[in-house]
Image (cartoon, rainbow, N blue to C red; front, side, top):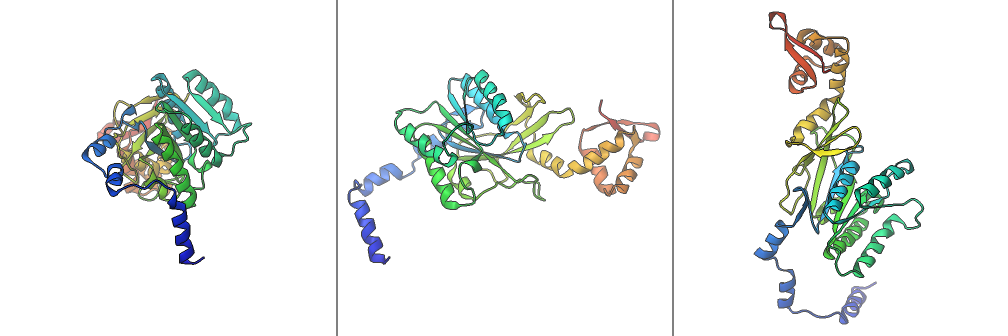
Length: 328
């Protein structure tokens, strides 16, 4: 196809479009102080984490708590009078009953691919079409679990197409929350990497990571990280969640810095070795460090871990020796 043919096609496609003057375009597109303030002051509907009418991406490693926390957010928003729709194309069939019962009790809709002839990638088209038939979707909260099921994250054109549809939903007043996977283990710097092309981050409004840490009482601490690869347009603030073994979720009284949890993830295997050694009973620091060295953990590393975490009892013994034992 020649450049002339391309130009003719473009002219034909735009002939019937309504023309706008430069002044009209400026009125529609140019950012002003008021428009910037409107973006920054977006209504916060869940803590200072989720902003109304925007696209938020929540990225976490597998089993990092994103589904449990997202369902908790849906429950809270339903109690506030919003209409959350949890769209689940990721869960195994054995979990559908549990998730359905949770949603029914919490007062939000639970959509799943089971027994549905609607393809995940086509669902966005149906939602966009449906939104055009409703004048106000300000109460709708769409939660997509997980993003990779709805578009090919490795193909820029597919991602761009999907994100443009999400933008249409927000322009009609809806709020969109996209759950996404990171790599299973953090990189050497302790940060997780988002799976997919950079267009997702470019085209969303807010993106944050969930950094999990399994606790020895069976609970999981999950902290929000905006700083390392995240993004925010609204004036959001991070928080820390605690997930109990029965999957109930609460907000921690204090925010846990992501670095603390990332360091734990990097040290986790060595921590397990130390806990295993303490199963044999109370040990003084010198003996414990020697045993760790035999397990391939350097003396410096074992001492740092022993003094960095509150995962064991510590007391002073005879001759001021430091003694370690398992928590009861």
